[in-house]
Image (cartoon, rainbow, N blue to C red; front, side):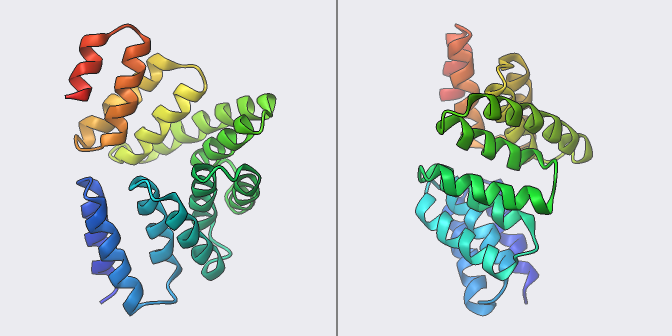
Length: 203
C-alpha cells in the first residue's frame, strides 16, 4: 500500500523524528522506485535532518520524475542553498516559480540565493514576495505549523522581527517539537535583548 508510507512519514516529521521519517520514505521508495512524490518528500526530510547533500540528490530525482510539479524544484532550490550552490538554487527556484507563480516558500529560497550572490535588490524583492505568499498560505492553512515556520523565516529576512516572533510562536503552538522554530525564535529573542525568553526556548 502506497499511502501509509506518506502518512507515517508525515506523522514522524510532525513529531520531529526525522530519522524515522526518512527511513519510512526510503522503504516506500524501495516499493515504488518511480514515484516522484516520495523523492520530493525525502528531499524535504533530508533538509530538516541537516543532510543537504542527500536532499539535493532526492530533489534531482523528484524533478526528473515530476518535471511538471513545482514542489520538487522548490525543495531542490532549498537543498542547493544549503550546499552553497547558489546559482543552481536560483535555476531551481525559477523553474518552481514558472510552474507555480507567487509561491511564498520558493520566493524565500530564491531570496536567500540572491542574498548570498550579493544581489541585494533582488533579494529584498524576493523576501517581500515571500512574506505576501506565505501570509496567504497561512490564511488558507491555519493549522499548518510548517507554513508558520516558513513565514517566520520570511519575516525575519524582511527585517520584521516582531512579526517573525508571532509566526514562530504560532508554529510552536501547533507543533511544540519543531526544534528549528524554537532555535530561530530564541535567536530573535536574543537580538531583542530578551535573554529570559531566549533561555526558555533553549531549555
